[in-house]
Length: 216
Image 1 (tube, helix red, strand yellow):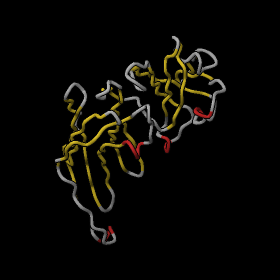
Image 2: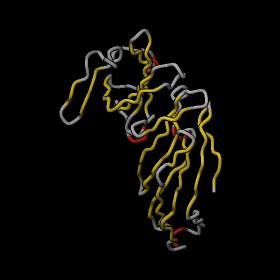
Image 3: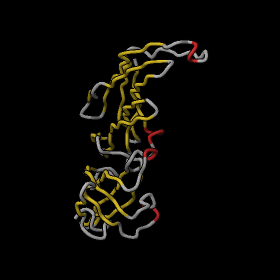
Image 4: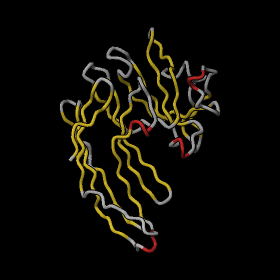
């Protein structure tokens, strides 16, 4: 069982919630689990820590709220035929990801997530290196943002990722499909700049993460 060393017993289905397990007493690497429960949702297997390692990234949630993006990731690695939990990090979201191979044959993740608040709708594209996990502010590659207020209306969409070089490179285009200015009086004289109608970003996968290769 994948979660045998992490959960006190096999996860059970709780009506209206889904899978839930009580978490064993573990070291400070699991302090983000503040209510002693974890709700696994899905798992991605790969070579995240090294080219020969067998690892598992379990996406799920504990007691996270909106500032922590409603969830987190549990990382496990296989040692002596047993799955060993290494850490759990809130706000690290890996439910919609594809694996990418680094030049040294390790794997990292390219992920998408959506969020919203205060009238804004956000579509994020970001890289996750599970050997060096970091928050969204440090891993964000690009985003599409749509909103409408008394000053500006903006609608953006992010096209599907276009893969190249056997998943070791990719490009993505962010399009501004609508942009218009409201009353200058209502905006207190603030000058708003229209984004480009289309921006294409090209990235390459390196041993230490994802690097931007070109923007146009």
